[in-house]
Image 1 (cartoon, rainbow, N blue to C red):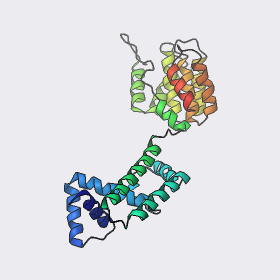
Image 2: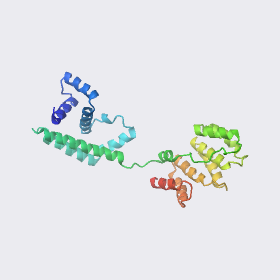
Image 3: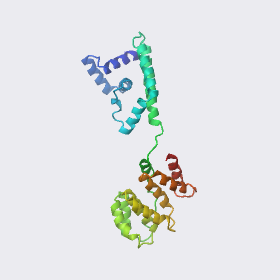
Image 4: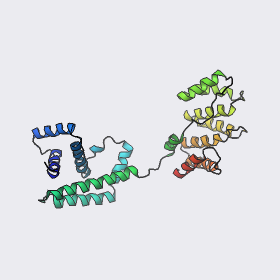
Length: 266
């Protein structure tokens, strides 16, 4: 059958107008013929998109994104487009020209694809919690373990627990060392503060980062970045902005580039 006949055949299948034996044949072809399956899905999306009540083709889309699609679908601009498409179908559905009928389908499908593409690609403002997840990174913080020297085995354990995400054990080891250890003091404070932040111990994390940022330790500026992340996790974007602006005052500051990016998104 030619393309126009196939389009009509698919439409009849989707509308339940085919005899049972032909429906069985279509279902078998769907499993064997990729091109045919794509054609069926295309027409199914078109038919369902023109229906006010059917969103089944989007059942695998996450709820948040589906809500965005639905808002777009119900917008004034989309309503006008739907009216245009529906009118075009009405004008041509009784036409003797199958070429015209096929043309309406493919133009309609293309327009709907454009609408959904806009919804997917349109920049979406992230909330503070999402930005925290995106920018949380600890791969470049200094190690608790010194290269080429003898290390406290408990610090080795603490770093291993940190990498495993076992922050309670990290704090059990590092908290008493803050007052007694001078070697790797900045690293100890960073690991401790980040562990407290990840455990939502916000007041303790504040105190730990403040202790580092006000010290004369070489890695003290790193605390400003992690305190900014702490504010993001607390959903306090205004205080996060204050610290991020402080970082962007000099391109030599720790996480200068990331701070600029974050400011643009907040």
